[in-house]
Image (cartoon, rainbow, N blue to C red; front, side, top):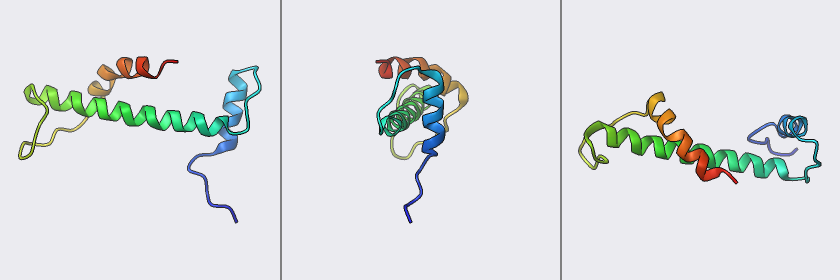
Length: 87
């Protein structure tokens, strides 16, 4: 029995094929998923930095109050992060 995949490969392949008339390689869906995970990780990191900087003007250090990420923080950094992943 094979181990479960972290995402539904068949669904991702179907979505990619529906939006592109080109043939894709056997493992293209894996690369697309990994790029998506890296993008989300970078987006959360940038939003975290933005949230902390907005709290008191600098990135918080040890002993300072914790600041949560809001939807506004994510929207502010989303365009910058998208430009980094454009290619």
